[in-house]
Length: 208
Image (cartoon, rainbow, N blue to C red; front, side):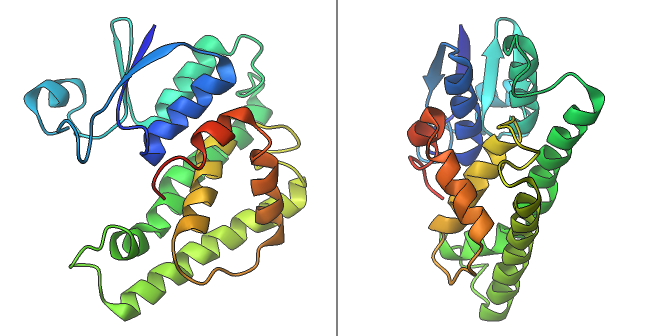
């Protein structure tokens, strides 16, 4: 049985929990992270020297980095390869959007999240906040354009592994308190995700 270390309202932990729901994987979970057990403890740092959640234990294998974890779980346990295709072309588009979420989209919201949700005293410059909001919205407009092409999910017509981190990112964008532009394709995508049991369970349960 998998063991997941991380609080269940963390966006990165929820990626793993949502995928487990999609694949009907059994797991045990322990609370680690802000407000519970410290990820800076020697015990945790021995598992993940970055001191970040989640960590997943699959037998003797220690996994960290959330998008890498969900790739591994899909490879190991999605026997029909429905979420993570084996063909190079189809897998490329899934990987492309997984990496876009981790590198481009994730970095676009940093200042905004630190200012509006974490209330960091070092992130209260109104000009920098507006720049952060604008940057985040530009990336969401890119996503809207992609969804206009596929008319379904981010990597194509079928739900894939890429929709898990990006779906949770859409939830974070919608839940963060600032004026949002109207993005019809993102809204329709969000409605499609809300028809999935895994998203209903883990998509809106946590903090933005």
